[in-house]
Image (cartoon, rainbow, N blue to C red; front, top):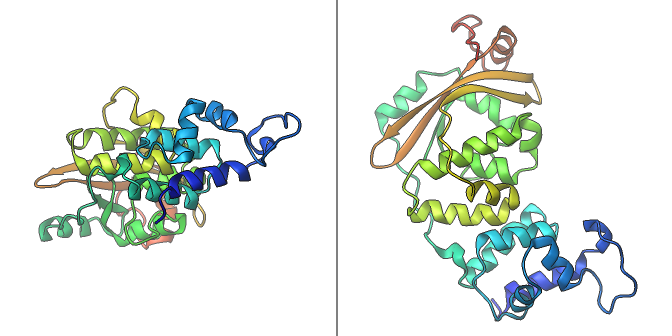
Length: 283
């Protein structure tokens, strides 16, 4: 790692973005390619002096929210946002607050309880939204959406950083609100693990996450109807209930049932559940 990898990356990306890509007029002849520092500062709502300090390596401790705003301004891809977050961590940025601990263990009785829901969709998540275990039914619903991709799937990260999420959830805004409320209230605000994840998502999720994270606290939603646009089954309306399992770790068991007859038939095709095994539950 060099002395100023973060600043060099920000400058390189600024010079690679044209004014037209961000909705700005060309503004005549430019001494350097790409955007001016003043334009990036305006787009990210920070000062030109601060952009200069970051690029020159005179400030190595930007907050996640600032980095997220810069990532939005520079139109960074998901991979570039993740790289930006890593550079900030390696450079001693605020993202170093709290390393990710190993996933909590799932007690055999909790695992057995989850299995009782199969073949209906159900999953177990921890306090930051990491998916710890699922029924086969949930796997059949979620895997085609990309929600279970990667070594450690995470509900919040999927919704805010995976472009497929906007298509998967027709009511994306409401889903995003509910997940951030869960993240904020599932544990104490001083929890370093939560702080670490929030800092990461402020960069990788950008303003969509940072705005919700800094907004007044709202109560988590524990039941309702989730609409899912499934690539194989069409639109699914699923009623859900959330069971809090408060022990050493804060865990949540989320179970889904069909909210109407169409969803019941679709789940039967997807998961092999017996039609009418559980009556559709209207929301």
